Length: 195
Image 1 (cartoon, one colour):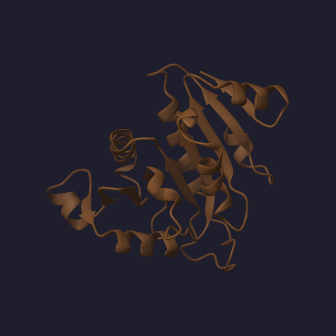
Image 2 (cartoon, rainbow, N blue to C red; image 1 turned 180 degrees about the vertical axis):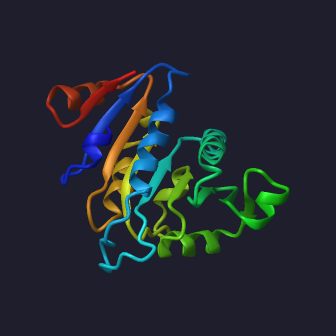
């Protein structure tokens, strides 16, 4: 997966594995590889604070919060801003109060999180269907992860990927690929990694 992320053309890959096999850890490692890459901004061309962004879409708020907490635990000692965007609320890590009292970040207003996403200040955004709203605009979206891809429709998955000026890398994860996904693998539209 990491080698695919280094290529100029966008990756399109299925990560298949049973529940608990480590798909989230693989997604986190790939996310780290993307956000730690400091290259020229795709839109502005500047290199100052031009971290690439990752969007991680989960089918439920409970699962999105679990992934957010996992990423916070993994990246808590690194200078990576992580946001959670769901229908019921938003969080940001790190924050001043998170370092002192709340270990999983601070509740913030949706409008503020959207501004930080648009400016590129939030490197990793984890959320639900809320990520595909028109109000969510990424500065430099380079990597899209869709968990339990069979729980999203084709249009929902494509909205997140097509919302960027440049096609981002795509990693879909599933323990139970649907027949359409198997056909995409067969015809070469999607590469497969099995855990």
